[in-house]
Length: 89
Image (cartoon, rainbow, N blue to C red):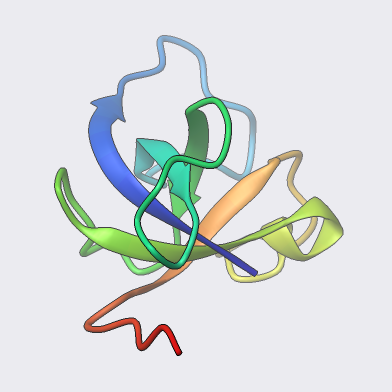
């Protein structure tokens, strides 16, 4: 699981079977302290409530397909929640 901040939305002209109706967002991965952690990625939104400016947590790899309506679709990252607060020791 990792953190990120939604920086935009993505519109696809062609959608893989099983991803119809799934919102896709442009996300900047972040460290717990808010610093950027690599290049921005496209992530599916399993919450369908996330939007630009929201801090989110995501899963990647094989687990990214599990929270979506159709299991095991070819995705790299999926938003599974919106972060209210991060407590950094």
